[in-house]
Image 1 (cartoon, rainbow, N blue to C red):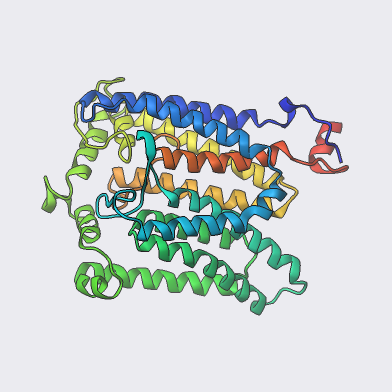
Image 2: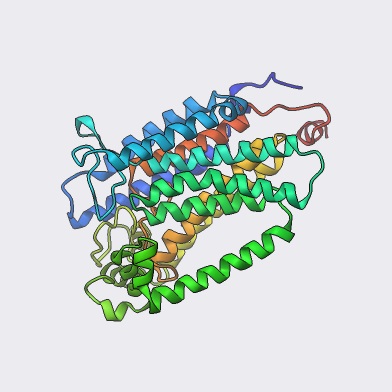
Length: 396
């Protein structure tokens, strides 16, 4: 085993460059979004601040060995759930209700607010990876019964934060948690004899829910606690012309902005369509209007590069825990990107899910940087064993 590597050899410069490009894109997009003067606050400077905080988080986590992170996973999971529980019962002076949801703690000193669920996503990924690894270590002979037990463990671990987040309520984050669970379940080694019927049943349930949403929404309100404003988002998504100027206002403006950008866009700060909160959830609309189809495609391509790099790290990892963690991070980022961009072009209904590394938001950015810190840690503490694939490549 070779541990005599310099910092330069251990540091993931490719991932660092990718994050730097995201930083530039984010600052330029947020700067342009502020030209409307909706807020007197300089969100660009605040985003730079959160990026600096995120960089410190990366360097802090990077020096933790992945084995240490695995040992800490249950403690982090407990802390995350405790924060979610406290959030429910906290007075509105420190945890106000915003847009019908109680999801934030107010930070002292005017630093803004923090959303515990953003960090809970990362804690969930770590715990699920540990649960899967420990299960495979204990189970010598794999069977449908042992696979069903693993599936039950994964579901139970995910259920607790889901229940707490539902109480806020925060549908967007709940969907991200489910996406993480499904992504890690797919790579966990559970037999398709279990997964195929399970996913088929899930598709049937989803179709049934869509039917109830469209035809019998009052039943879902009564028994599942779904709020009326959440139904309105779905109706505004399906038939925006019927909600013109009201519930579908953001969607109409987003479609108008992206459509008017055409192939090459109107140029930096050349936007003409006003979209409220365009610096956060609808940042892709700014990119589409000012840089057109070409600019939007470049941003999407940047996410493909990031995900490809993470997949490569997962495949090269010589530790199963690292591979499962990468799978969870990939699932989280992929769902965020697909949902956020999809909602701006009417492919998906609108939810409060930001575009990773580009939308303004301290909690979201810190959560994503925490995930990247774990990836940096995998590369920094990568152990080259004799006759490993990387060792062979060096000898050629």
